[in-house]
Amino acid sequence: MSGSRRPRSDPGQRSRGSGRSKPTAPATADRARALALTPVSRETLERLDRFVALLLTWQQTTNLVAPSTVLHLWTRHIADSLQLLEFVPGAQIWVDLGTGGGFPGLAVACALAQKPGAHVHLIESNNKKAAFLREAQRVAAAPATVHATRIEEFVTSFEGRADVVTARAVAPLKSLLDQCFPEARESAAMQGWTMAATLVPSRIEPAGHIVVIRDVERRNIRP
Image 1 (cartoon, helix red, strand yellow):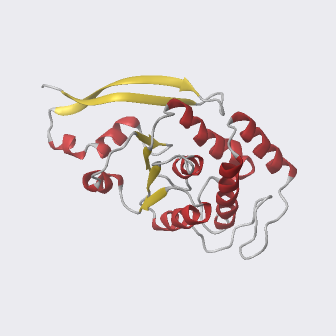
Image 2 (image 1 turned 135 degrees about the vertical axis):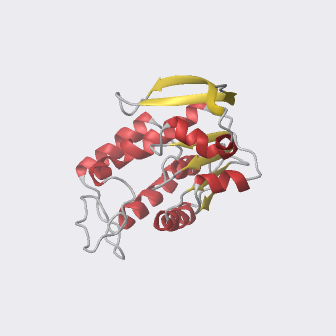
């Protein structure tokens, strides 16, 4: 969110209204490392470059990502998002809950732009972040739709199908499931879940993990 004072620009950022500044050595090295970890096509890279340039501009006035991660934006956010693609190579329709500054949803959308029928729904209730996402989607020409609404409101009105649902640092798992299935909270007897879950080490952050969940069902809990 923007504050009362204009924050100091981080190295490698571009001032609003000016031409693209030359990336710093650390930022360039981070981009190269990210691309080595998660290689993409030339077309996808061009989309990601436009997305990142816009994010760095908006970051000066709107807190889209943690300031401490800006110099490692490509590995910490871009590559971390793109690694999800290997788990669901055939997925076309994605729903990203709490997209924030565009991760993982918009980064994934950039990578799927050349895949026929692919589309990513970006759910973000913060109006400033939603405005950024709309502009980033336009600039990157990514196959995505921004829904400026709460998760609970989206899931009750969404009538399409979803091959994948993603969430990155949004809420604890049980809270996310409750938001995705709000009708379950209406019954005191339906408070548990069964699922097939796999904990996969992140290729980007050695201490981090990706929770891959399939076959989610509500479970009745009797008193």
